[in-house]
Image (cartoon, rainbow, N blue to C red; front, side):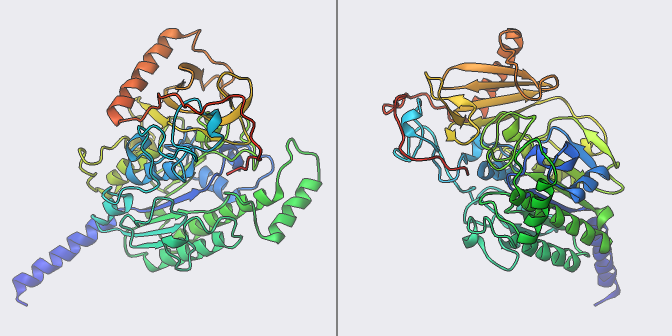
Length: 479
C-alpha cells in the first residue's frame, strides 16, 4: 500500500471513529401494562420502584407521556414505525373486537363476523416494508438487539437479533412467555452481556418486558415479601402481592441495566428510556386518580410512566409537562443519530423530535391523536351497552385528540363528544363539551381533518345482530 493510500485509509478510519463517537447509544426499556400510578415517583402506595425512581430523579420525568394506543400490539407499532395506528391498521391482538358481538351497535370485525362490513382493515403484523427504528439506526452504523416481547408479527424488522427470552428464543416464542417468573432476569442478563460486548460500538437495545402482563405470577420469595408488607397495616386498596413482585422484577431489571452502563463507562453516551406500552390493567392494579384502564382511552388507559436519563445531556431532576406520543421516538432517534427518516410518501412520520424537550427547550404546540374502531370489554367498565344503562365496555369505537390542557373524545356509536381540561380534572370527571361548545367544535374539526389525512377507518354500518337484551352465558376474563 503506498503512502497516499495509507493516509486516505487513516483519514477514513479517523472520520468514521469521530462520527461514531458523536452518536449516543439508545437503550429503550418498555414494561408491559405497567400503569402510570404503579411507580413510586407517581405516588405508588404499595409497589416499590427505587431504581425507576432514581432514574427519574437523575433524569427527566415526562409527566404527560403517552403511547400511540391503549394496548400492546398497536402501541408497539407506533413506536417502531413512527406512524399512528390509522396507518398501521393494528388495533387488537387477534384482529377482532373483544366482547359480546350482540352488544356491538356498529358492525366491526368480531369473533362471529371476522371481517365486519369489510370497511375496517385489521392486522396483527407490521408490514415488512416499513422502515423500523432498527433499520433506520443500522443505516448509520448502529448494532441492534431486541429482547423480550415483540408483538409485531413474524418479521424481525431488521434487528440484528430478535431474542424473546434472553436465551436465544426467536419470534416463534412471542406470546408464550407471559407469567414466566424467570424471564425478566433472563432478558436482563442478555442485556447486560450485550452492553459489555458492544461498548466500543453505537448500539440500540430495545428491551420489552413480559411483566406485568397477566397471568400474574412471580418468584415466591418476592411475593412473600409483599404479602408480609400487605399484612403489616391497612391499605387503601386490596393490593396484589404477586403483581407487586412483578413490578419489582421490572424495577430490578432497570437498575441492573443502568448499572451495566455505568460500569462500562457508557452512561454519559447513552440515552436510557423507561416507559410502558399502555395503562395498567383493571383487576390487576388500580390507576387512580386516573379514569379507566388498559384498552380504554381515558387517561388510565393511555397515560404511562416515561423517564429519560442521559447524564451530561439531560439535566437531573427536571420535569417536562409537554404531552408526547409513541410516534415521537423515530424522529427523536433520527435526530440523535443523524439518521435519515423514511421516505415521507411511503412512510409518513406523525411525530416530532423530542430532543429540544430533553434539552429543556419548548417545541411548537401541536395536537396528538388516537383512534380505535373496535369494541373492548373488560373489568373496568366505562361505557354502557348502547341504549341501556348496563356498563360493559372499557372501549367503544372512538377517536381522541389532545392539545394543550384539553382533550376531546369522539364516540362513533352515539355521535357524542366529551371534552376535558386535564390540568384541572385529571380524573376526567367533568365533561365540559356543553360549557365550551366553540372549543369542542374546533377540536372536533381538527380531529376529523386528521382522520381523513391518515386514512382512519370509521365504523358506520349498524350491526344487524345488535341485541341490547342479549344475555351471555359465560364470564369475562381480563387480558
